[in-house]
Image 1 (cartoon, one colour):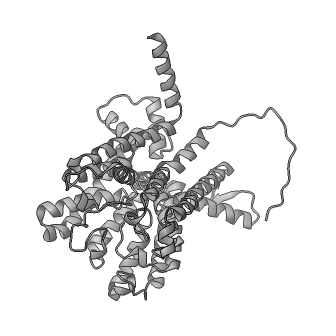
Image 2: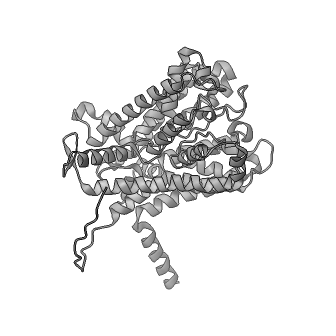
Image 3: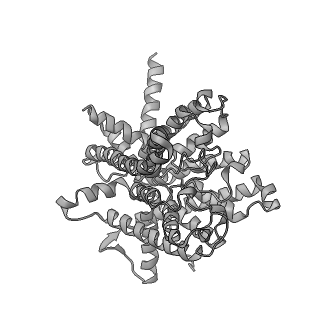
Length: 468
C-alpha cells in the first residue's frame, strides 16, 4: 500500500510539475466526455449513434472552438445534443482550468500556488496577484457579452422562429460567436444545411452583432480588464495597445481587400451576387470571421484564388493572446514585424511604442510561427494524399486544402473544400490539427518559458554563418 501510494504521489508531482500538462489533459478529458455524450442515441434526431469518428470530430471542433463540422448541427442533434455542443464550446472558450479556478474562488476556498500557476497560464495573466479578480472578470465579462448578443439576436430570430426556436438559436449563436466557435443552428431552415449565415447577408443586426461578438471575444480578457480599469489607471499595457491596434488594422485591411477583390465576383452566393449596399457589410463580416470564428455570409468555395490566399494568412495570424480565438496571435505577428523592421533599420534593440522587447520573446515568437506554419502546411500535404481522388477529378484544388488546413490550425471553421465531403481519413488527420491549434502554440510557449537557462559546462568556439 505504501509503495502504491508513493507511486501515485510521484505521478501527481510529475503531472502537476508543468502547467501545460494539466491544460492539455483538461482538454483531453473534456473531449473524451463530450465524445461519449454525442455518441449516445439520445443526442441524434434519428435515434442512432453518430459514431465514434464523427462524434470525436464534432467534440474536438467544439472544445477547440473551431467550427468545422462533418454533420449539420441543427439537423443532426436533438436538444440534448445541442446543449452538449454549446457546453463544450463554452468550456473550450474559457478553458477548464479558468472555470475551475473561478468556482473555487466563488465558494471562497483557498486557491493554492499550483492552481494559481495553472490558471495564470490558462488565462494568459501576467502575475499571481491579479488572478482571482481576473478569473472572475473573465467569466462575468463573457456572460455579459453573451447575454447582450443574445438579446440583440433575439429581436431578429423570435419574430422568424417563434419564442422557443428564436431564443434557442439566439442563445446558441451568441455563445458560439463570442467564443469564436462558428457553430450555428441554421441548417434546418429554408437556407438548407451548412448554410451558416448566408441567408442573413442583408440583415445588419445579425451580422454586426455576430461580428462584434467575434471581435470582442478575440481581443483577449487581459485587454478587457485593462479597458475596464482605464478610468482608474488612465493607461493601457503595451500588450493591450498592440492587441487593439493590430486587430483594428487587420479588420480594416481585410475588409478593404475583400470589398475590392470580390466586388465583381458573380459566383453563387458570392459577394458580387449581393445588392451593392450589402457588399461592404459582407466584406467586413468576411474579414472578421476569418479571425477564428467560422461563420460565413458568403460562399467560401466561390472566393477568388487571391482572396483564398489572403484568407489563409488572416486565419494563420488569428486573434489576440489569452482570448477565445486561435492562430499564432496578433501580438506574435506584431513582434515578428517589429523584429524584421529593426533588422532592416540596422538597430540592435527591438522597440515597440517606446518599450524595449527582449530578444528571448522574439525567439519564442519565431518558434511559434514556424511550429504553426509546419502544422498548417504539413496537414495540407497530407490532405493531398487523402483527397487524391477529389483533386484528380477537379472537385477542388490544393489551395482549398491549404484553406482547410489553415482553418483547422487557426480554429476558424470556414471551409472552401466542404469538410463533410472529405474522406474519413482526412477527418482523422484534421482532428489533431484542431487540437494542437487550440493548445499547441500556447503550450509550446509555456514550455519555453518554464525552462530555466542552464549554465553550459563546455565553452564552444563562436561559429559564423553567412545569412541572406
